[in-house]
Length: 104
Image (cartoon, rainbow, N blue to C red; front, side, top):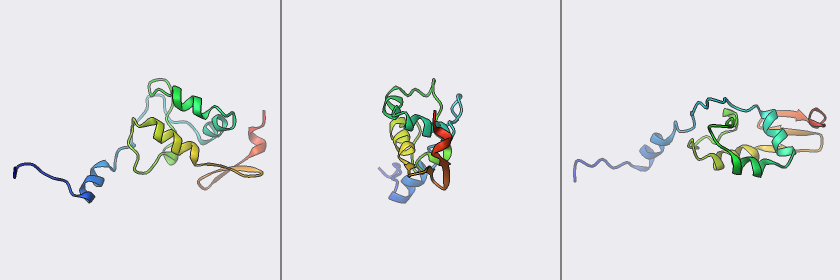
């Protein structure tokens, strides 16, 4: 049994750290595209129909820090949850986007 290497809590987390660096062949969506999907109330439909081979991943700035790639549902929910709606603008992290820019 001495040949089996056990991982302590910190070592386990270090091994998981680089998990959200998948380079999707379709590229990454822009924050504006994510906002448009959320405004149209199609975020749940988008999450349920999401396929890595057909769709773009969320922007790297909107992915969970400790997230793992190919857990797409969790990643997308986190990304859509980062979009905050205010009276005159949408906010994603530190970036603000005017609502006027997204009117049809």
